[in-house]
Each structure stands twice: as C-alpha cells, then as structure tokens.
Length: 197
Ligand SMILES: [Cu+2]
Image 1 (spheres, helix red, strand yellow):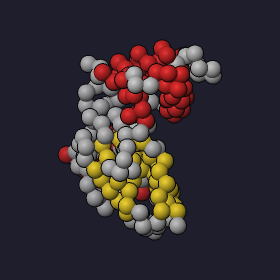
Image 2 (cartoon, protein in one colour):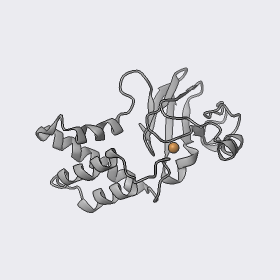
Image 3 (cartoon, rainbow, N blue to C red):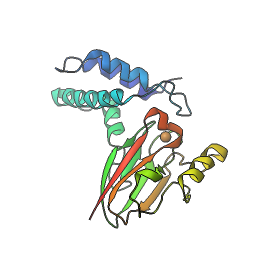
C-alpha cells in the first residue's frame, strides 16, 4: 500500500499548479512515477525528465510555503525529502530512490558520510570507469571492485545499507566520482562526488 508520504505528495501537488511555469501534467507524472512497493523497488521508470520535474515541483512547494502555509505537515514532509541530512549526521542522504544532494562537493582528504534516511535498502557503489584513474575504488561493504560489489548485492544483498545505516569514504584524489545504488540504478538512483584540492 502507499505510505502517508506518498499520499502527502498527492495532496500537496494540488497547491502547486498556480505557480507560473509549472506544468500540472508534469507534477502528476512525478507523483505516479515515484510510487513504490514496500521494499522500495520502483514500480515504473523514473526518467531524467521526471527528476527535473521534481525540482520544479519542490520549488513550487517552497513558493507555497512563503505564501503562508508554513507548519503544514504535508508540506514539511516534502522538505525532509529534499534535505534528509539535516545537522551533522551525514553529508549525503538516501530517500526511497534518490541520493540527496545528487552532486556533493568535497575537498581532498574529506570523509564523506552517506546515510540511509529511508525505509528502503540501498547501496553506495562506485562506477569503476567513472572515477579518477588513480583513485581508490569504494563501495558499501568495502568491496575491491565494481564487479564484486554488484555480484555480492545480487547474491546475498552484500553492501546493503538498511534504514539509518551509514557508509563513509575518504576521498584522497581530486576529480569526479560517479556512484550508483545497485538496486535502484534503473530508477535513476545515481550520484556524483566532486573532489577539489
Ligand atoms: Cu537505492
């Protein structure tokens, strides 16, 4: 069944269409696209276009709040989804099907902490060919390479991050690092860490 949060989104979307430039149809499709079953498996595809629409949608909700609806619990739930790592607990949060922020900027030597802030199981799995050449491979479960990490997930849920669990990695080499959540990569659960000197 659908959770309260999904219901909340369905409810709040009706407040948003008055914001100029937000196509009502895209809001509705975003809602439909993010319905999941209880294990967090995405039922339908979650396209890049839908991801863009989500940002537009959240901007619209923000405008609604400034119009005087602050304190409404349905609106607040949308913001928890938008910033799951409030305070110092983590740097990158995981919602049902997204890493937030999707792109995180770190400094050389920084330890980045991911936290599963959702009810679904996730992984943090670096894309071997999309990290700097001389960088150390990283994945939750501390596997040495991508193939091992992905096989482990499919064989025994290796590298699984359950609710409230964290994973951390220290970045020593500058550059761009692409990583995925193996169980939700097809739904677009992909993130980037950009490391600078
Ligand atoms: Cu995931």
